[in-house]
Image (cartoon, rainbow, N blue to C red; front, side):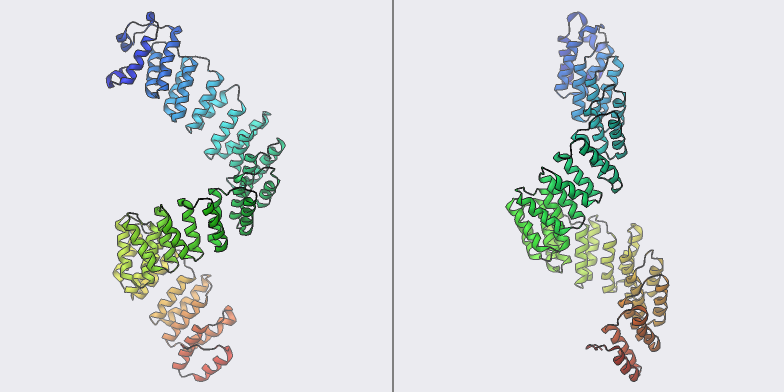
Length: 591
């Protein structure tokens, strides 16, 4: 009580006065007596005092109510179960775990016989407050546990991803010959759908649903389909769907989603048509599932069909729908529709702007990408990492290396941290400008900031150092690389060719094969170019002949041009003539 007085909390004082004026006169000495803790113990006065606490609960003064509860406890005034019920409900509604524990402790210390209804409320409160350990302790001590309680506990574990306990409780429930209801099946099936390894468990639960006559329930049926779909069993998912006597929009959405995840494009589109034929409207979730399928497959015709449905269903102004539609048109190569749709949208969030910038950049619409990038900044929308990477790549592809470096600096000034894609995009700008110092600074930045340099980043570093004339640095980066693919090896071979080190290029070609990396067309083009620069005629001839015989790679015009140039400069025209006849390759203009 001193807490209230010291802090002059008017609502609490009003509450206390109400408590005083509604308590029988002979049980109270005075207001000062209450403040000093001198109230006679009178157990039968609990009804009026409980009403005061209930008033506090109804006024959502939870903290004050618990403090008053503590004052009453000190004075030996009993609290009735209705008051505890009100406080527990308030703690549940407010997700006030600490206060709920205090009320629980108070109940146990009071010595009252806690009825089943209060125990049920305690379990619900702990579950709502995500304290499953406390909920389980109350649950396990209960003499009577109804289906509702079992379902609540199973649901609590399922929501928090503690799936083993979901299955354990479900088995215990069946062992006690309790018949699960739809709620139990929904929660257990949700748990089964979380991992492919739970498929066998899911099949058993499905059989139980059939045994208890609940497979025809729409909610249970939907969860069964979803479980089979997420566990990769498309056949059983379809069988359950086809057997359902009643299907709602969610049933169709789930089975369409299953087909989309399995890459069954034709089935997905057919199911959508069947759904509409049965008079059901596709919901937002269904549309957001199937539009990306059109995007990934480049299925523009089906995408337009779904877009028409969206317009008729008045979903077009939804930001999420607009975003996936823009992405769909972009990936299908229809930038005009993507841009038009983007321009019509009443609300354009940062994600949508970034999608549009990246879309234009990736589809060669460089000028539009740059315009959009600057426009979004002018409207106060911060570009994300993807947009920065896209616009830097655009500048590099346009030969605007200086602008790319400026953007790289601006990106860091606004605290957008570069990633491996940024590194792979910006280093070619340094190579274009032969800007060794900037390239070294970016290389140092990678180490200082812990940017993980992937194969593309490593390859870009090798290329940058080589084009800036530092072959030794290029080789050092190459040797330290954790992963080297064919392109990395080709880049290093090309670096030696560029600097006229044919012998080293030739050595690296064999090292590449010893490392288990298979050469391709570009590899041979690089080695032949190196031989050409170093006048290594015999080595080049051997390599050229081995392409088809040993590596099953048909020489193309570039390989042919290298050999023609090399043999011509060496004055070995008979060999050149034999080569043209033997290989039967039509030389192009360069040859």
